[in-house]
Length: 396
Ligand code: ADP
Ligand code: 3PG
Ligand code: MG
View (cartoon, rainbow, N blue to C red):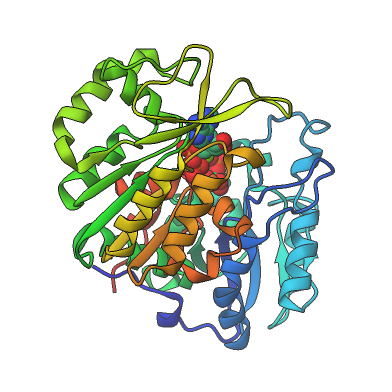
């Protein structure tokens, strides 16, 4: 059932608490290094403002520890400043989340005004989904909108207990959550065939449930990244010094059996002698990585073969870089998959923190049908999980 959206709400003269996911990557000195999640929330924020509402924005940033000194980099100030630039309006940053400064800033809001509360995880009640803390947040506005898709898998106060404080006609999802849910529904329900999944990244253990849930729906599952070597080892091949999860070999073997010919391992590899600028690299053909070498990327033949499959697909879903793309010598596999998807006429969906970053870095994010703002939320959705944060928003 589709969820009630911000379109269904009376907004004029209302003060709307919007839970956004502005948990953005930061530079060492705290500046916003990637504002994709902020830009993704703009349609909802602009819509509410254009319809006569004022906004109280709440988000977490990072994983604060509770030590005010150590947590300084997690203050929302740089995020509020970037939002002000992007939205072209002043954003009043409150110095607390539910305390006197937040209360005063919210009370002073006029239609068209924006308050950004301090990092909601500075409050112990947030992670505990504490109803008393939720009440303190909820009194700051008369309406609740969840546009924080990236946090939707977390049972935290601002995601679950806060919306429960509002009447059913005063809670809804925003445009970003609506868009993400629609894409997921298509992927899991009625994807344009043939559907292909491209899966890579650091660990097979992160992706087991995902692979299991996607297998019956896909024609092909193209594997890259470090998980390749756990699969190869499970098949009895040598993996050199590549990253292998030795405690997952049995599960990897089971997955290989379950998937049969659907699961495709790269026919060649780009290997390095070590990590670092002086390392030697070479292409290894076949499933065995020589002693002393590390598999860091899919090889050129794999890149071509995967590109061909992507070209003729109806739907492609991609999670997990094909190699250690952050290091220039090992970016080619990930880059070529990104370009193949960008050029394909298939419905192309990219998700996962690093995968989305890679697609941005290679300048092809706009050529995809959708780049999810979710990391864990995207993966857990594809695993078939449902979230309490969405259950508390009424159906239409
Ligand atoms: P996502 O965040 O998109 O879900 P993951 O977190 O699963 O992706 O994995 C991303 C990380 O995997 C990247 O930082 C990348 O450097 C690493 N990675 C991919 N392939 C390899 C490899 N062959 N060896 C070591 N690390 C790898
Ligand atoms: C994310 O970046 O995946 C979300 O913002 C959730 O953050 P968390 O993993 O710290 O809960
Ligand atoms: Mg990641």
